[in-house]
Length: 181
Image 1: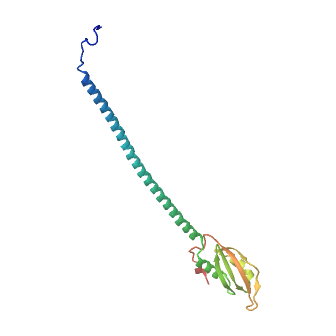
Image 2: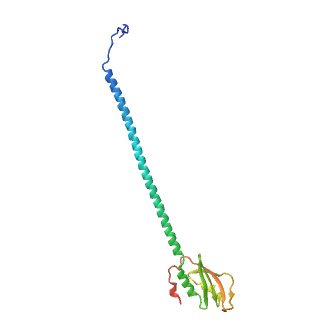
Image 3: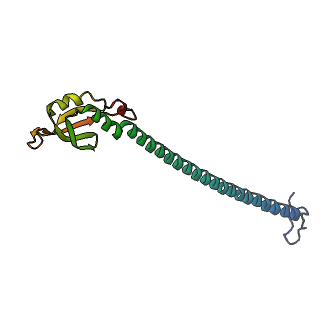
């Protein structure tokens, strides 16, 4: 298996399979790199598509969440107002109740609603008995005089200022005027 002839005299062997094998190797490497590039491109496209779908879903979820919050706020607001309305006494019913309870020898110069209180100012033949009379009310509680009872020389009656708290949840839509004189 040894050739002792000088290199220039040696017979040259030509491998006839070498050029096709090189061509096939280069073509295989080119095809492999093309497949790898195409795989990476398809993966990037899939990631972009999924990212867009995720963004759309997130935006839809945020809109849905915002709508839920707005609906919840609107319901709470409506319930709050309905609750406040149901707790507060109807002015007409309170006035009818006071009219029914106050004796004939008493007249009111001023009747006003301040917050959750009713303020009465007027004159009566027996102002000291008004507290006992107003404690029988279904709409009022804790009646008390503000200041002192003063005699009025012109009318011969006693001038008074009285405050009573409105009861919550009563005198709402009741017909207290039906029991009036």
